Length: 92
Image (cartoon, rainbow, N blue to C red; front, side, top):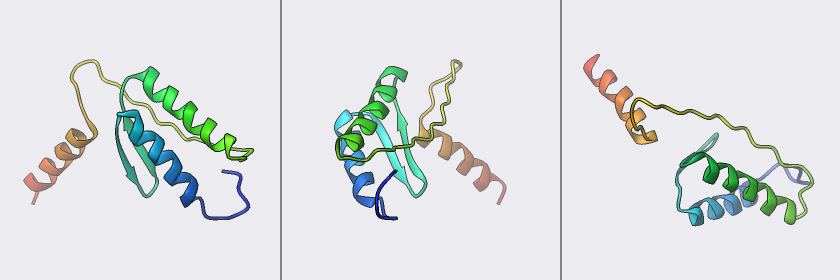
């Protein structure tokens, strides 16, 4: 994010409010935010986040996007973590 300050917490908070209003499932963590939902809605939301920040006067905004999909079963971020936790518990 192109700001005059090394802190971007205000900008992150604004984007988090936008994500919350979207109704999509999300989880903010120290390295970013995981968002779950249909492709079109997630990509639209990312575009809206950029627009919100550009409208504030930020001339440069960068998003790192990691995308995963499955066709054999439905998974959520919680179910993926739970799967690893089951293995860890089993291996103790």
